[in-house]
Length: 77
Image 1: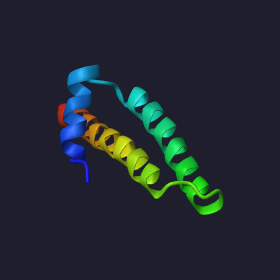
Image 2 (image 1 turned 45 degrees about the horizontal axis):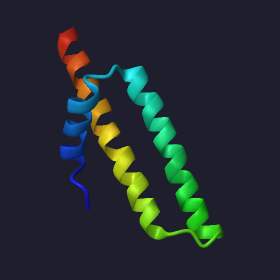
Image 3 (image 1 turned 180 degrees about the vertical axis):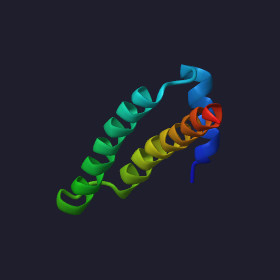
Image 4 (image 1 turned 180 degrees about the horizontal axis):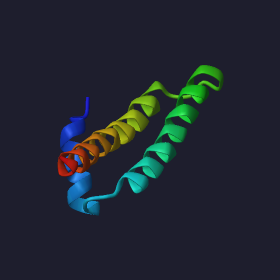
C-alpha cells in the first residue's frame, strides 16, 4: 500500500500549495477514474490492481484537501 501522507507531501513539493477549488477539481477527476476502474473490474474483466492505483491517486488529494481546510480554519480564529 502506498503511504498516502507521503504522496500528499510529494504532491505539494511538485505542484505547490493548491487552493480548495483546485484540489476539489483534481479529486473529482481522480474519483471519476476510480469509478471507471471499479466498473471495468465488475463488468468488463478489468484489473483489480487498477482500482488500487486510482485509489492511491485520490487519497493523497483528500489528505491535501483536509490539510488546506485545517489551515484555513486555523487562520479564522
